[in-house]
Length: 306
Image (cartoon, rainbow, N blue to C red; front, side, top):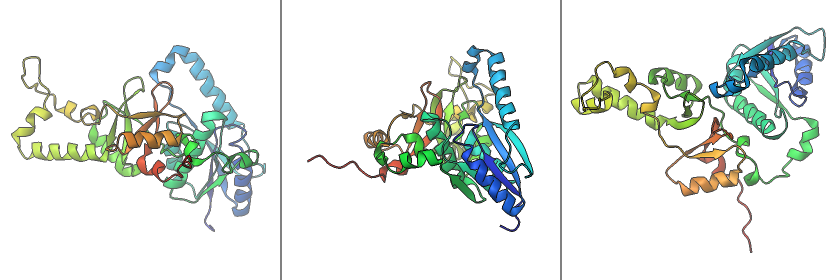
């Protein structure tokens, strides 16, 4: 702690998320450290362009101005701001690599977004290499203190936030990303950001074995490696398509709504005993996270009816 120089304070610019600013300021004052205020803007998807680029640019500019206006509780403290774009959890973890501590709120905006903010906090706590301090908003403490049974809470509270992979991405690039982030699965999306499958470690292992056999000259895998035309002839120059994620992902995939309960997720796993991941999607079928079987099977069971 004596070498603490930078404290990362992620915010979504809601009043609830700003509850962490005061604690970050106190710790920065104690250790004479700089505060780094971090905001992660979503990456706008192609289908969202129907509202107009001018509108999206205006929203982004408004958030930038709000972040620029943010100040520590102690005006004399040194601080800087960091405006990022992408998936909040992974982006915050990457930003934390240059900091000595993360101080963030467990809740942001109300409703589903409030719960997603909690999932981001959990993701950061799990993956950041530096200490992470989570701040619960005082007005929400009583509400969150077990008033809702665990099995009835929305799945976004226990899901893993993982960045989606485009179906046309290449497997070698994805492999490096998996290794760097220690991920075991990721949702795959089409050009409109809609969920189209899932890529798991099992899929990756199958891809690697096929590649090893091809490089060893095993002609039995040529039909899987090369695309064929309408006449059944192998197309030359189609090697790159073999490396696309869409060729190796698992599809179709079982999904669950971000508004569904953990109980419903557990029932879904029971109906599909061979699957170990559920893709959590929003109302437009866009993935917002992954639910691993172990995340829900150990939650308390509802009491049996007499």
